[in-house]
Length: 194
Image (cartoon, rainbow, N blue to C red):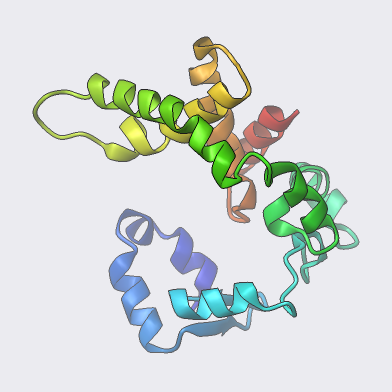
């Protein structure tokens, strides 16, 4: 399997499920010999791997990662994204992970979440009320994507006028973990983070 060609092929991007089903038949964890990257194709295998203390999460340390010698010269924007902005709670090893998590823990404590319930319900109702009464709705763009951004906006007491800008930043930044993104998306992610 040529993994990166498969994952970037227009047919796969349009409907990945038949290809993923065929690939899973060959095993839940597969090594791409060309890149040295392991592809994990089952929830159970991913859960086991991601919870293992032996599994490093720091993307800067990956073999052939963005922090390797020569990476800055090969792709300066990607190098900046991976070394300056990627160290986030979800992709760093201890003790940095615990230090970063400590910042968020108080906000997500059950008592804190309970205090936010009314505001979350109000934003939920605003989004639902904005949907058409009949016909089809694209739930990701109409509801699932904006709701967490609005909750964060309220949490940080930011004005509603920033909703569109926050959505653009989110769209640019969420692609930061995609190693196959084109140069224009890398540049947009860097601009959103700067």
